[in-house]
Length: 189
Image 1: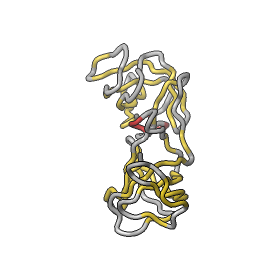
Image 2: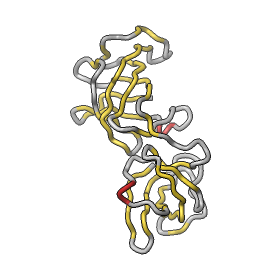
Image 3: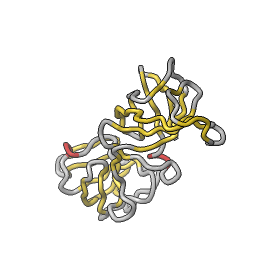
């Protein structure tokens, strides 16, 4: 997950981020989602020391070939281009738990979604069903609205493609907070 991108004199473009799954090592061909930019990792560093491989939990900088600092952004996800590469989603379905919202949330609601290091406006396109928070069983189809304390299955449409994954496969890319009026109003799982 990209947290920042730097241009370092004599070295080039260096994205900085945290390894969430798998390993990152020099020579790996990575793809950055959702921009679909493919490049080779030239080197990996942590605390100014070169690494042969970075593992989950490591916060690293890695030098990439032939990519401008302007092409990469905070919130992009880099992954192995040959092994289940990350992709941008134009829409996705998630379970939403409303924690703290003063009114009703209905189709069309467009708060800010915080997902890993990305912050993006995201529309609640369709509230498909209310579900029991404990069992996950459906309690109401196509509800008009949801409110604090409710859990629901919602189809969401980000304002720009967003890299998301199922919580079961990649928990760090499947966790979200929904913000409105500078407060967290819901979480997605």
